[in-house]
Amino acid sequence: MINDVILKNDDIIKVRNFNAWYGDKQALKNINIDFKRNKISAIIGPSGCGKSTLLRSINRINDEIPTYKTSGEIIFENKNIYDKNLDLTIYRKRVGMVFQKPVPFPMSIYENVAFGLRIHGMKNKNKIDEIVEKSLKQAALWDEVKDELHKSAYELSGGQQQRLVIARAIAVDPEVILLDEPTSALDPIATQRIERLLEELVENYTIIIVTHNLPQAVRISDYLYFMYQGELIESGLTSDIIKSPKNQLTEDYLNGRIG
Ligand SMILES: Nc1ncnc2c1ncn2[C@@H]1O[C@H](COP(=O)(O)OP(=O)(O)OP(=O)(O)O)[C@@H](O)[C@H]1O
Image (cartoon, rainbow, N blue to C red; front, side, top):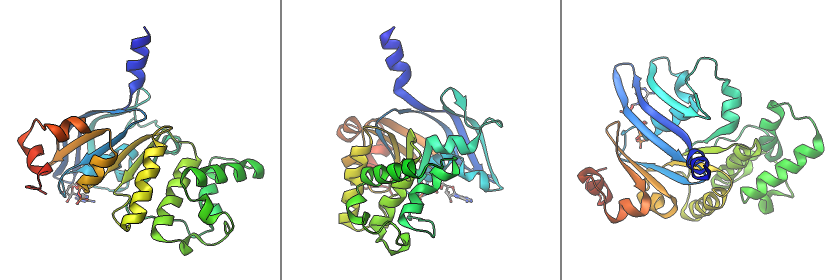
């Protein structure tokens, strides 16, 4: 019985027979993945293989593209997120997304983090103050900004902006954070800070990251998902795949022969 509960709680998002098209072009082909709770999962593969499409599909961001269509299911909390009656605002509070290029809102550092709280109806100033501080601390940005919370977010460096965006995602208390190439616009020091941060955050959140930076995926992830031409080719524990990939394509990618 206890084992049953543990097993059931282990997977947080299940992708089932999932296909996606942009017009006639099929970008995802029959993807099946069980993403593990409180782990870092990295989706890797050469440019154009469908990594971002998969991540964006989990947040339903691609709904905005008129030619985009899907079949199959993505299940979160026993519900298919593609069901018509899903409340997207509530879903995105629980499954947040951070993009490649940090996109702070044109407002103060404080307001960037408080934004989501206000959207979800929080009015108590003390409570908002408390969550803003906690989120900035969790995102390892508090010490750098605590004396200038009302400065424009645009005055922060790229690395600080990316941590601010992560603080904004954390503030609404999500369960899953999706990150699409979050460090590709950052220098090595800022990259290292974000990587350390993700390793800390995974104690409380499930992290799914898309990266074309293979050494980064190897450094930080518990699970790897290797995609090629819209298909999931191989998945498993990062340490196992790195040591002995089962598929020739995975091996070629790991050795830099494709991509
Ligand atoms: N908005 C779009 N309209 C049409 N085709 C698209 C769109 N976005 C992506 N595609 C196509 O879907 C396929 C998968 O793209 P996707 O961006 O998911 O790949 P990726 O693995 O994330 O690539 P990269 O590492 O270069 O970001 C590619 O062939 C791409 O050209």
